[in-house]
Image (cartoon, rainbow over all chains, first blue to last red):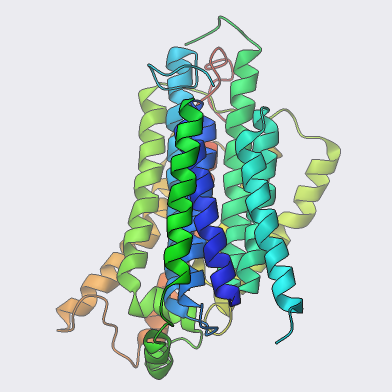
Length: 100
Length: 89
Length: 228
């Protein structure tokens, strides 16, 4: 049980938690929060599994760096769309879903 | 093989999972966002433990900092709009 | 009831993932060895920077493309809504103004250091760009950022600069006969420095635009007549 494996298991746990939050919540900003948590879990899995033997691996680190930047741009765009939806509908949920 | 360093990592990992859970179930949206920023900073600590200082820098600045600012802006926008009911575009 | 069902499914998924992870064989260590073997040909001395900008430079090129797409999307949604105002913060207090005066020049300095340091220690274009963006957000919150949106020529040029230079270098080396993004080893360091510098500027501007580009709250649009 190395450090990498501990964080990889944590990453899987975070991914599952985020998935639960994404499915269960109706409010769009909570969905965005859950999605970010899923993303962080995935990054932990990437680096944790690669480094489960204890050796530092630069390739998944570079991939995760890219992933963090892509996640922030997706989050920013998603927030803008959620705000536009709120301005148009008055509620920050998708049409057809109730408040939760 | 001492258990000392791994105890620290188990503590960080457990706290990460717990903060993520609290972020998802807190009823107050503002508290959720603040907990998410804390989650981001703990992730930076986890990256440092995984010998990934580049990712730790980026996670603290972009993941916790900028995403937190964006989320706080959005939550403030929603709450400001809610305080003016009926004035919609 | 649905929540319980979803909860059980998610627990099952998590358990399956963890069980699979615990059963994996030991990693082969081939890739880190490859990176270490070719590090001196890459033009930089830090392995993560070398992977990011040389060995897997194509991923970074596409990443900047994604950032640019996000900012275009934000601008498009904003302009389509015909908002004239941004969510202006309330007038800053004295503490915020003083703090901004003190800290923003330091942040620009730190960004420059991170950019330079990326060649031989942790750092690089993304971290430097993020610090610049944070300085921009501070300026915005203390009311000092000039009207950014709708974007005029210099902002548009700055947003595009990083991607354009990276793409130009990536395609330019194909003209010389190499494949895409295969810098000539003797000049790799110089090209990477140029790309990183322009990337830093672009990333800072893009991230600030993502923050500033939010539409106004309903009922307040037009009451401020443009964000300034």
